[in-house]
Length: 171
Image (cartoon, rainbow, N blue to C red; front, top):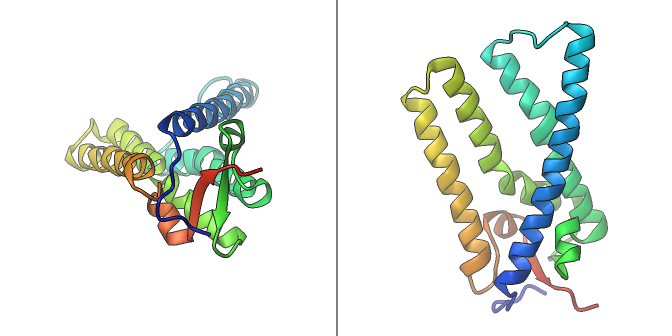
């Protein structure tokens, strides 16, 4: 049941975010190492890419896998590794992989927009659209974080669209 008053201590949410962030950093470090080895053996260095190629590479190798991994964990384990370490669980009004994908797609959208704006900025010397998108990305990320921390029900936009809620583990 979705609680209108959901008393999750901020300490638990920060702990969850920290561990999930560390998991993402570990994935990205492994991805970087594998990519550098692939480039070294296949191209004898980092190949030049167009902006579109760079955008697609980042989306396909980092953003989509992270969304899929977190969606799988939320759906099959009722929460990410960080949630479980922090004593939290994900409650669904109607549990489905679709709801999990919606929740995580929205949750990681600021990250993807940050990638898009940064890559576009590198190719355009950080023109106004890249700076504007970067500011929007950071603002949207801050909004999601503030919603999860400050709302009475502790739900961010992804939770609202997916009909989910992070709750203290009652087990």
